[in-house]
Image 1 (cartoon, one colour):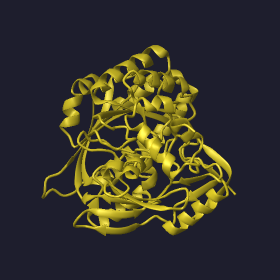
Image 2 (cartoon, helix red, strand yellow):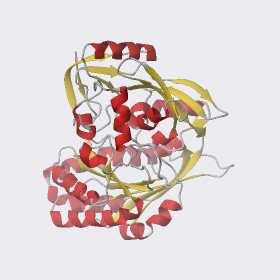
Image 3 (cartoon, helix red, strand yellow):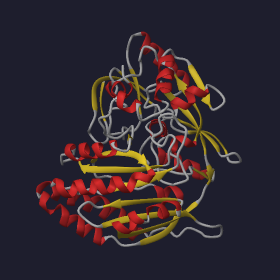
Image 4 (cartoon, one colour):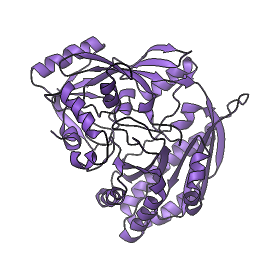
Length: 433
């Protein structure tokens, strides 16, 4: 028996049985044996979700033994990978085949199956989340059956399983549609928030990848524009010293210290944020795509993120800003804004609409409840959809109204897991019993 805890310390489980299969057949045998004994099963990745989506109640399946690239076809860009492969390991492995994922988030600690299953995404007005890059997957269901799923085979299960929060079974492998490896030119600079919001559409549409971070209690935002470089331009990465200062010293060590100061002296937060935002300096560099996309994030925090219709993002930001100003809350963490193209995945937060993502954070030693609750009320007015792996309070009835294919997902779940072998408190919250 073992104790499990997620990265953020928001969820844990004790006294769980831990299984470590090394093949799909072993997963199938383990799942069948557990369910025949009436035990509930959960596959657990890196534990990077803030919600209880992967909390095991009885049996925890660790997929560390399924953590490698199985096959790679450079000509087609199709790569099959074990579900337990960490994104950092996957990115380095793809590079050895001169391939890359076309878009990534800013964290690479998750496993590929965990990232896919919770709807992890990056930013890009013409690009979807990680699940849109999945061309096929292998799913072990509650009775030990092994389903091969794609747009052509078990298509309804495929539509449901690409983002399923682990509620349909255990994904053991994924086939990804990758692209030739590419370089990105990163341009980072602080700008007045009003300028960013008034030019948001131009910034989002005029760059391959655009995002910004707004520091509450200030009028400044850090903008990030990442664009593919034309042929003939080579890498010019950030220097080792500058990279350490910006990405390790300031973004992690100093940021941890300023957040600890915020705990002791909340009244100093506006001044701290103003100093931090004004200390930001512009930088530009060219590097391998995944090295530009992904950053180290070591300061522990709480996070909620909602997807809103892209055309409403400025309204939501302005309302959030107004609430912070009048609330008296002190927020030392920046607000992150990204974009994505509409897709057709049933439980994708970008299903059927061009989307903007607003993520808010709070340091783990500070209370987040009032801030997060106010944000949820604001985004509810525009039918915001919560990230499946980040903190929220929505229930199945509320989510059903926000996802046109929600009932179709539930119908697939009824078929492949009628006894709810893969349920836990979180799936009961978001999908019902």
